[in-house]
Image 1 (tube, each protein chain N blue to C red):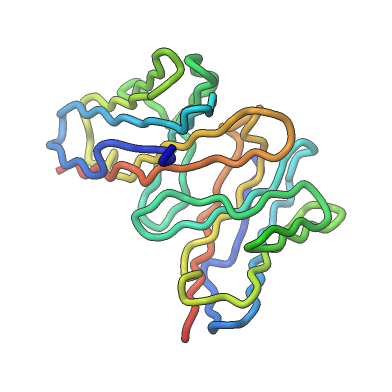
Image 2 (image 1 turned 180 degrees about the vertical axis):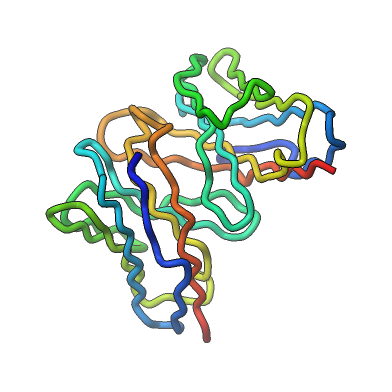
Length: 112
Length: 115
């Protein structure tokens, strides 16, 4: 099982760039890295997914080094509404959902 | 399509009672997942279906838990003889299987409180 390790919490201010790193030392060859955002009393929401190098979409970037043992979610110019828990998920839900594990997440607090 | 729908949103039950939750996935999605989440922790995988077939079950899914997905559409998760330790948020997600990138869409969950 690809266990993930993330910081428990992070604080930031509006307009800053936030980088959240996830360690996943025993990631398997077929595993993807996916990040989800969760607000209180809601289900997780997909942010971004990658396999290697860099992926960018309209809300975030995902940086994955060559050894794939870690990944960094980058949120540009955060706002108060980005205050949430961010989960790094490693695995391949298509073929092995049971081994795709969410960690305990990083609680990001954005301050004015 | 309004996304993944779960019903009820909240359920309070007495210990020992049976409860059933329903999940309606996004209509074109063939995969459906159930997760359990307790306060301060990430979601834990319980089981998943591809169409009507239950392909994987976690060891967390004791024999008091059963999930079905008749006709490959909506799914139900039943907990028999509930215990206080079953109190949690039960999340359903759906996706369309394929190669490469896979995005799962989660419902808002059913919060179960066993008293």
